[in-house]
Amino acid sequence: MAIGSKKIRPPVPVAVLDLKNLARLVLNRPEPDGLFWSFTLNGERILGSLFLIPYWRGNLPLFCYTKVEAGEEPKAFLAYRSIGQEEAFFSNSGEDPRYVYGAIMDIEDPPEFLLKALKSRSVAPETMPIMTKARSMNVLVRTMLILSEDGATPPIWSFKDSGSQILGVITPVFDYYDANALPVFLYVETRDEPSGGFLRYMTQNGREVTTFVDSINEMRYFYARVVRLAHMPLWPRGQERVGNGKQKGGKRSGARG
Image (cartoon, rainbow, N blue to C red; front, side, top):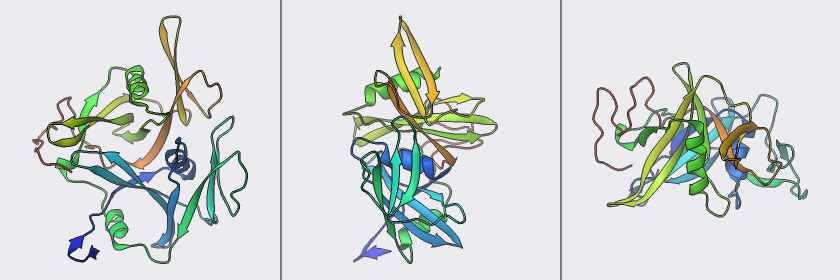
């Protein structure tokens, strides 16, 4: 697709596990930009939203999407709440103040830049972030606490790789030489899947306490949202990851994404 002589580059496709995880990603923010694309592709209903992260030269657009379950039809809004109890469902009304609402843009044919994105499940090696393994989950959430601004924090991406569960966050280091932001993928590997949609954190009696929970309750805690993925393209699957961003068998180039 092109506007005049300029081509539109496709976003990076990120397959989210289900509707609740997609709603948690897009709508659980202080000022959610809740616009969802809805269309049919190869007989399946796709629901997705564009999500921007600071990345190398400019922002990296992610098209975070999920497949709507058979028999469930999107309506005018996606309703979501996380206080006390987490819920996500389609609705034709946006009047209940207990919920945050995302508008659903139902289209007949998806634009070419989204089609091109969904046909690819990988990205160029030079687009990969700098892989950095943290010593513990506490390091991960502690970093997110520092990165939080006006209540907004990046999500913890959770997905499987080679029998392990990966939990990671892309932490931007701004104004690094001529880059807009140096994207550092700070991650941990665990055996178990996260048992809740949020990671709750606080310091108590001189120690750090982290727990997975299903919703947001006591406000004395810091909460980080966990978004489970079916596929994460910004991850070098099946390759050795080391702290300097190089991968076994290859050399990272200095190009920007």
